[in-house]
Each structure stands twice: as C-alpha cells, then as structure tokens.
Figure (tube, rainbow, N blue to C red):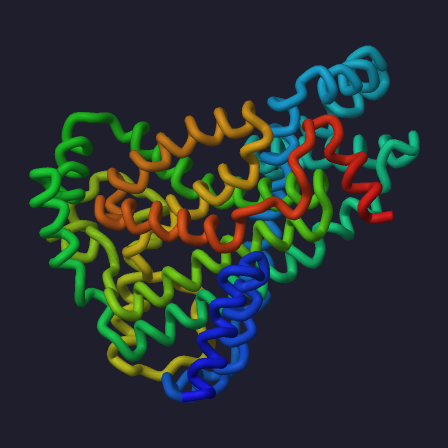
Amino acid sequence: MKMLKQTLETISWLLLVQREYIHYVFIVTAIAILVPALHEARFPLRWDLASMFWGFTITGSQSVMVAALLYTIQAPRKILYPLWERYWKDKPKRIITAIFAAVLICKAGPQMALVIVIDTLAFVELLEWNHQGKKSASLLIASLLPAVVYLFVGLLLVFTYTNIIVRIKFYGTFDGIFNGFDERLLGTTVSALAHHVAAILPERLFLALNFIYYGMFPQIGAALVICGMSYGCRQALQFVGTLLFAYCLALILFYFFPSHGPYYLCVNHFARLHYDLSSYRTQKMLLANAQYLWEQKPVIVIPTGFYIAFPCMHIAQPIVVLWFLRKWPRMVAILLAYDVLLVAAIILLEWHYFVDLLGGVAVAGTAVLVGGYEPAIKDVPFSQGQAQAKRLRN
C-alpha cells in the first residue's frame, strides 16, 4: 500500500509539476522494455536504418524548404528584400543562380530542384547573417541537432511498437465498429463518399490530394526548424516531445482498439481504381505487411510500417504544429488552410474513418495540454525571437 501511494504521488507530481518532461518518461520506458517486447513478438534486434535515414533526410530537406517559405510569408520584407539586393540586382549572381536551377531541373526534376535551390539559398543567407554578426550559424544549427536525433529515435520506437502490436493483436478488430459509427453519425461511410467523389471528379484532383496527404510530413520538420532556430534547443525538444507523447497515446489506443482504416473493409478497393497513386500502393503494402505479421511469419528486419487508423495521427500532428507556431499568425493561417485540404485528402483517399479524426483531435489536445501547455520561452515578437534565443544560449 505504501509503495502504491508513493507511485501515485510520483505520477501526480509528473503530471502536475513536470508536465513538460513527461514525454521522456514514456520514451525511456519504451527503450527499457524494448528487448523483452521484441523477444515476445519474435522480432530481431535489427532495423533497416539506412532506408529510414534516407527517408528522414529527404523529408528534412523538404522541411527546410517549407520552413524558409513560412519565414518568408511571416516576414516578407525582412526575407525578400536582402534576396532582391543580392541575387536580382547583382547580375553575375542572378546568372549563376539561374544556371544552377536549370541544371538541377534537368538532372533531378522540377520538384527536387525547387527544394535544393530554396535550401541552398536559405543556407547561404544563414552564412551571410553569421558573417554580419547577426546570428551564429553553428549555434543555430546545433540547437536543432538534439531534437532531430530525439525525433529519429522516437519514430523508430513508434514504428517498432506498431509492428509488435500487430504481431500480437489482430489489426482490424475494430474496423467494422468504427465504420458503423461513421454511418450512424453521418449517414454514410468514408468508402461510400470516396467512391462517389471518384466517380464524378477528375483524376488530377486525386493526384493533388495524394500530394497534399504526403506533404503533411515536411510541415512537422519545418515546425521543428522554426522552434529551434527562433527559441533554441529547449523549445525544439519540447515540440518533438509533445509529438512523441501524442504517438505514445496513439499506440496505447491502438493496442486496445486496433483498426487499420476504411480501405481494409472496402470491397475491391484496389481493383476498382482506374489510376495509380502512391497512397494506394502504400495501402496495399501496409495490408500485406500487417497480414504477414499477424500470421506470425519470420521477420528478418523490422519494417517501418505504421498501421494505426484510430486515432488519426495525420490530423493530430498538424494540430500540435499549429499550437507551437501560434505566435506567428501568417504561418498559422497558411498551415490551417493547408490542413483543411489535408482533411479532404485523408477522407477521400480512404486512409481514416471520421471517428479517427475525432480521436486525432483528442490525442493532440491531450498532448498539448500535457507537453505543450507552456512555451519554454516567453512569447516575444517574431523579430525578437533570435535575439532572445541568443541571450539565453549565452
């Protein structure tokens, strides 16, 4: 009884006094029980780290581009005027930049070329500010590294535990129940709505929705960059910790209410499609992986699949982003408009039930309440963020 009382007191202290750090408790616990959990699921202690690192790097480069664009939207004169002075008025630089962009378009395609050009300009500007004594480039970059590593390790754990749960619990147990909830609440199902829209709207709409769906991930990295470079390492870690706490809640809910998504129940979901999207290819792969794991077949390398329908983390993560960027109203307005389209993509591509969206909002709200209830640094105007971060670092 005494030990139970002490445990409850410790938990209460963590929740009420040290909420900012509770995500570390969950991550450390996940690491501590990892080996026994892998042994129970008959998984090897082996991941395809090279592939995950490569995907993480690609998303990171896109995140830097999105962060640069959001900064520009928030303070256009501060960002665009120096670029105009240095690259448009200066003819040699203008020509070099144009040649650089043209070569990239030919070699890597327009989308990747855009990412590389904007990332390069952002890095050059950071070095220029460092040269002028406005910012320390090394300190700003260093402020991001702990949060980046923490996010990588946290996501690796999340992917691992989703695989473990699918190994020991059937992944589609609650799909029929959640699909029934949708029908009772709204009079239709996600699949029925998606089929109706697909029959009357052109293919290019679904191509756009597919782009929007996967475009959610760079906004997570962009928020990390903005938090870290504006307010330092502590705020970046708090942002990542809030995201990972939301993932921990999602894993717990997935364990008790496993569901895979509307496409799992959709009859002839892949056969009826008359066009090809990466979303559908991914859904097909996830279904095959989940079935393989559930059948207890041997695993050589732990896959990076994410099988959770309820709650919808594709809506929970953007809500956390909006909370941490709330001091920059123009950024929030742009991201909010994007997230409205994201909801349409989630539904029409049959990734999640309507109920999943509600669950995602609840998980995001809980994570923000626990991990993001108070900024690590007091609110300051956008133009003063770097100065305050520098003073705190010194």
